[in-house]
Amino acid sequence: NAGVTQTPKFQVLKTGQSMTLQCAQDMNHEYMSWYRQDPGMGLRLIHYSVGAGITDQGEVPNGYNVSRSTTEDFPLRLLSAAPSQTSVYFCASRSGRGNSPLHFGNGTRLTVT
Amino acid sequence: QQQVKQSPQSLIVQKGGISIINCAYENTAFDYFPWYQQFPGKGPALLIAIRPDVSEKKEGRFTISFNKSAKQFSLHIMDSQPGDSATYFCAPSGAGSYQLTFGKGTKLSVIP
Image (cartoon, rainbow over all chains, first blue to last red; front, side, top):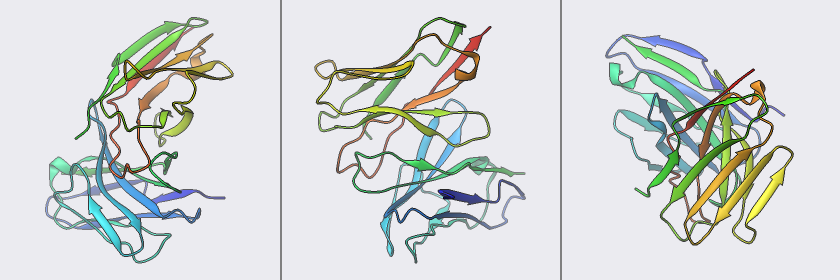
């Protein structure tokens, strides 16, 4: 059972480049979300989805796009990377309602120069 | 944005000692109180969680204490080991929580 899989593990971008961070889960979870983790800031929610075709913004959505065409996949797109987007990105999913545990991937470390 | 305050930011404990991390929240509708553990280079993983029908839950060396009236819950690590060195996060939530707020994390270092 793979759980939540994120690719790539590491990425270096130049300012203005675009890229997609991939996230896939094999647990049939309806809820999926993206967080960024920065030193001293904890985990901050970027976007989330409660099912295929339904997405919404979190605390820090600017500069990021998401879509959810299947239950399994929830990609995060950076349209024009900026140095402020240098961070570690985590995808997480859960079954059921808000009072159930999140399952995290192992993250993508992104550096924007 | 619901406030979640976690303390301390960092903690150094001798091997065999007790580590205590606290989390305070505001939303009285929360009914799920988890602690996540994160090792370097890995994603957070659920360590232990409690629901408000009990005031304490123990799993091995890890115990959650819950104080509903004070809107606080704590993680106690007994007989702390170097392998417990990690960052710990609280993230209280309720059934209708779609935008979870995490505490800012506590970096625990257990020294031999």
